[in-house]
Length: 363
Image (tube, rainbow, N blue to C red; front, top):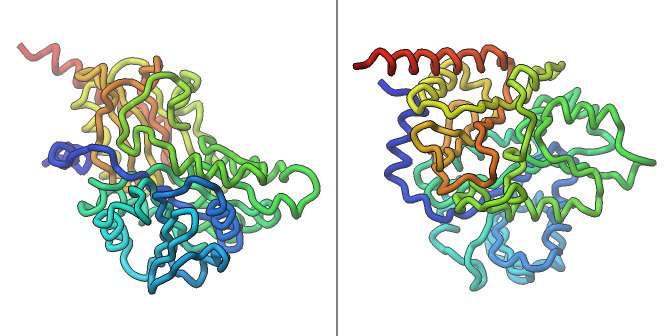
């Protein structure tokens, strides 16, 4: 019987992977400034076609003078954004948006989901990746996490939820910088880097709304767009990196979470790679906080495979029409709890060698 990852090939073949609507998740602990940042974002121009989904309308705090028209669960903002209060199921809210297809006459272009301060963003990501009613229409663009520059270190020490939020983020947005004298605490910056070395860190207050907007509008491999040429078009976690082994980039720290990149110079046999992923998901799925990357398969050298998963659940893998840059190495970012990066890489190498021996022995 095939494992979870291998079984996704059938799902990928059955689904039409056209242009899907990118969804950005905005997370961050209680009081870290999500609402303030959301208000600042909504003041930016040219956000027509944007839907904002929040856990409860009462906690959003959108300034009343921004509201043009309201109903029981939606607010139409003057800049063309639609704000939905997520009182019920996220799947239902996204299905309504997909069926509607437009906001105030503008095509639906992107969705921002704001989580509550105590929420683990994992379930939202799993919904986007695994729910059959959602994944053909929407795709993860990224996760942004607000971090309080004043209280952030104490929050990370006291609340495991905040550690999880930081660990899975693609962008870390430092807030409340106007309340401190000088730059952010070096200890806090080091803590954030140890939790998530591959997230883009934004420590300048004035740049935060634009940084969030850029993440929302990122039409890269994970949003199903056609690959673009040139290194400048690559998503942050595909950018050029040193050809180091996974073990070289797996710092351990007190939070029990490590992030590292598995890099392979040579193309990987499809069968060996999928077997490896099946074993990894089956044995350590709960510890895979987030996995994302490009894979060079020997059977399709011109079309890199995009993988994206959260714990046991992965999105059906997609083959891009072309590589986004001249770098054709396999590059997979792992954010994990307690995994040994060196052992993980060695297991892949063993399966690749077995596959090659099997091919040589087959008449």
